[in-house]
Length: 130
Length: 267
Image (cartoon, rainbow over all chains, first blue to last red):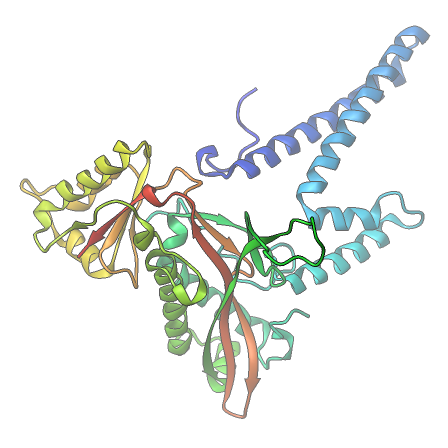
């Protein structure tokens, strides 16, 4: 595989961002694999083959969940929003809207330049030339 | 609502957009330190101190046979520069005027950028910040006024860094006067001096307002650490019939992890 998980020149990205991007790419791949197994299982008539693929899909569930947990630990705002949506009963869209609103408002209070921040968002400008 | 209280200001969305983009435009070229040092954060307004990972012994303890140590931290400093914008100018923004008078904001942006650069390069003892130039353990190199000799001086600084095991790439920060002199100069054969210096350091050459002289420093990472609490933001203070009173604000700490990773250049 190439280095296409990076949208910016890799040598300009901080190490943490590169790790974050790798795990995002990994999360995508696990989700794709889960979808592929789901399709294969749905068309497979051999019971034994289906059982093997179910087992393999279980592995992908595990990988996806581990990747997701890692990313959520590294991204407090994402985690906060996810906490308002995941494992909740009721309307998913409604939970999503509420979780986003609450989390971004709290983030703004802390001044962090993420979603909803009011800072100028300048941050580090290394690599921006002279 | 954040502590910046922007929602209380009589400023429309278009007005805020104009103020923020003007501030960003003025600040970014002037924030020299951020172009050369590691930037961590922003961690938010509530972030008050940088962990130094060190302790000091507490001699007096409340009970015998108990050893006590106190964690050492570097407190963040808050910088705030006030400025006012005429309400009539903001109203004209909403009418679509393009030539809004934002001089006060521009001046505030210059001041806060200069203060940040000065703290990072020259230090700020009252705030507990040691600057890159004052912390350097190398002999200072005098640049002088003869620009033709600058490549030799900068190469000497690079050699000094290499001699103590500080590897490339390096960056070069130059105070405004020195930077202008460099820009204006072509060497024999017309080759721009700036390009020659860039080849020697192998990294960025940065225009650094509020810096006297300059510095050649490592930009490999891990040597100079800027810890941002709240990144530069515009907040609201008050207003009257004529003007809105605002401020530019940030909080940060800075520390030098590798004092010999920079060589000071005297003017």
